[in-house]
Structures are given as structure tokens and as C-alpha cells.
Image: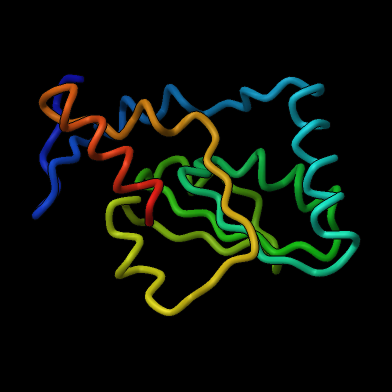
Length: 142
């Protein structure tokens, strides 16, 4: 992870924007998307819902979700302004430039019906394996 810098008051190391650009893709297969959306369909039962997508990057997953669920609203948080700039804009999609480790301050008092995290845990790195593990635990416990 060349050119990483330490986030203030945390043990998280961040990728440089040039490295973030490598993640400008959708990694879900159609079968994986269908399984996730079938589960979400069962959970929502057609009701409106809010969803927070951690590390949602370019928004391709969110776009497919919004197309499938017309009553859904998605908020994406991502540390990469370059990836966020690739998002299709929508009145049902909110984009937040920020780090997952700062979610507590960013979303203070906000609640979401569902939270997704696709291919993000391996980005929550630190200077050692135990720190990486702790970063993941902190992120998952919100």
C-alpha cells in the first residue's frame, strides 16, 4: 500500500486516490445480486426503506438496487472522491465523502433500515494484523 497516510486519531491506513481508481468496477455476478436482492425483497415486503452502503464507491451496486426497489433510498459513504464522482445522480441516492471510521460523527443520530458492505473489509488496514482486525471490528460495530 504505497503512499498511505494515517487518519487522525485512528489506526486506519488509507489508499491513495490513484489506488482507489483500481476499484472502479462492479464485482457482483448477476447471481450474487439476485441472491442479495431476493433477501432484501423478503425483508422489505415492498415497503419503503433506507439503506447505507459502506464503501459504495462508484455507486454501481446502489444503482442496480434502486432500479430493483423503487421505494428504496440509498446513502453511500466512501473515502474516495474520485469514485464518488463516478456516481449517477438520483434523488434517491445521497453521496457522502468520508471515512468509515468516522461514521459515528458523520451519521450522528441518523438511522438506516439496512446496511451493506461489499468488498470493503480488506481495505480497513493498519500497520499490523491485530490492528487490521480491530479496524474491522470497529467498523462492523459502528
